[in-house]
Image (cartoon, rainbow, N blue to C red):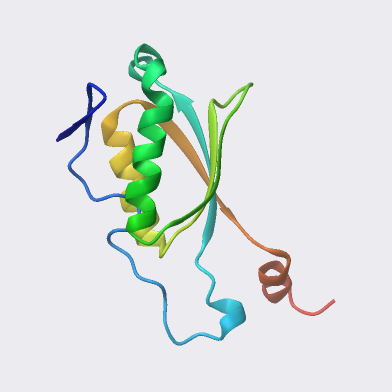
Length: 127
């Protein structure tokens, strides 16, 4: 495990390291799958709260280097403490990355697969 601001980071690959963009599809359908990830701090995450911005920045850099497109990341009030919107190279890559983040022990998460208007129209068919 590597250390980050005094917090152990898992040795697992960052989000996206295990996946690749699916080839051979038309431009409109070749967009990577999009996810909304809702995070809640664990007891450990609350103990290291002052490091959350630094930790998030490091994770974002690792994930972007691994092929993810982090579209948005917000700290929030309410039931969830953080919300991230990310395009992942594959479903497998997303799972690998979520396991990596979970292993650090600072957050628990709920992940939602998100669909654009165009994707939803293809799913439901013509109006």
